[in-house]
Structure formats: C-alpha cells, structure tokens
Length: 317
Image (cartoon, rainbow, N blue to C red; front, side, top):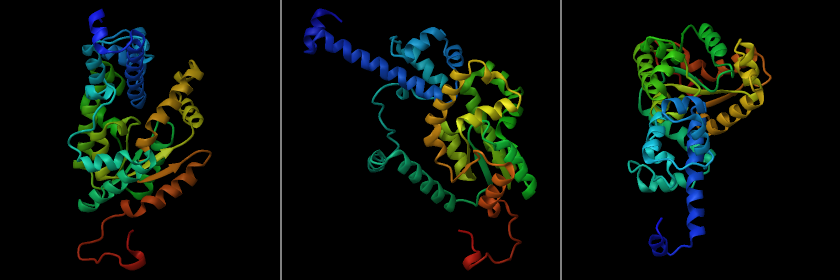
C-alpha cells in the first residue's frame, strides 16, 4: 500500500497489518475446515489444486497470502463456491430472508433438528422411503450391520462407493487420483440416482464424506430413512486396523488428531440423520437388534393391493 493510500484509509499502518493478518488467518481456517469435512489430506488438496503442500500448509496457518486464482482452484477442488473460503460469505439469495434470520438464531443442535423436521415433511409429501441409508465414518460398523440387516430383511445391500467404481470404470483410489474430488462427487450423485432408479427396497451404505455435499445428502435424505452409525475415535481407528489397513499406524498420534478433527467438523452433518446408533463397546448382535427395530416397518414388503392400512396402535408413527 502506498503512503498516500495508507493516509487516505484513516488507519495506522499497524492496524492495517493487523486486519490483514486476521483476514489471512480467517481464509486459512476456512480452507482447513472444508478440507477436514471432506476427509482430504493436505497432499491430496495440494495435488489437485496445483499448489505445493508446503505453501498450502502456510496458507492454512494464515502465514501466506494467496492470489484470487489460487483460492478459486482450491474452492473448485473442494467442490465449493469461492465465497465459501472467504470471510463474511453471504447466505444464499435463494433462501428467504425470514428463514435465514430464523436459522441464524438457532444453535447447531436446533438447526439439525429443524433440518430433520423439514426433511420429514418433504418425505411425507413424496413417496414412501425406498429403504435405509447408513451414514458415518469408516470403522463405525456400516458395512457389517448393513449386510446382516439386508440378509435378515431379505433386501439388497448396496454401497454407493461400489456403484461409483462401476460407473467410473475404475476403483475409488484410481478414480480420485485421476479425476479429483470434484469429479468423484459428481459421479457419487449419479450413483445415488442410479440406486434410487433401480431399487425399491434397499439398504444403502454412504461414504463418510457424502454428508458434506449438500446436493447429494439432500437427495439421500429425501428418498431414505437415514441412520448415523457412530462410535468413538479410538474404536474407529482400531476397527480400520483390524480390517487389515495398517496405514493409520504410521504417525498414529497425527492420524488420531486428524480423525478427531474430521469427526468434529462432520458432527453437525451426521446429526441431521433420522436416527443415531452408537456402536461403541457393543456387540454386532446387540446393535443389529436395535437397528432392525428402528427400520423394520420401512424394509417390510408393501401391503398387497386392496389390503387396508394398519389403524390405531398398529399404524406406523
């Protein structure tokens, strides 16, 4: 800034520098938060946004001043609008002002409850749920419980990631490596549409990061009853290792810190599920019994044509 511009601003130089520092730290923390929600490593983001991992680390700490072009590449890689990485981003103009004001006055827990109420209302106005969708991080028990519940109820069990791999023509790792998060999330949405179009009663396992994609999560919530399968960070980590993935053992302390960060940043999203099932320190059989009780009516075969709906105490709530 020139001396003339500094004088015109009416602010001392130290105050201007302080404002710039606050701005840089705000941008950096937003990038770190968005990356954490998606479970992306700094290496993955740096590769697909075409920026060095070292510089990205400085940026997240508020120690680097990024160009607008770089911020746009980072936002695009994260599948977010540019405004999401900038401070004081305005709420979407598509949302009415009274609704914006109401939501802004609610706590995170109240917002999650409001979301569930709205989703239930949308579901009530549309067709009945097509089945059950299990959300949550890897290691919580989604696959184990989903497969066993599907066998118990006589319905199909489908992992969205398997459909993504089929549509993409390669495994998930290769797909992410070649196309990046942006393309992967587009295919993930198409995979969910494919499941909805081809299954009437089904149990769906969603990837851990799907909840951070509003368009995809809204589609999932409209067509399925959702259950958040959760557990403690320690059990998440141990179960992944027990499955044969030893990568978390490398730099275990850092891996646990990253896991806790991801869980914390996604917590508000996971809480939007219709139900929550905590599998911490519980047997598979015990969890399966509870899950079956939650969704037995949803997964039951439809009543034969002409048969009256249950009334009174037998009617579904």
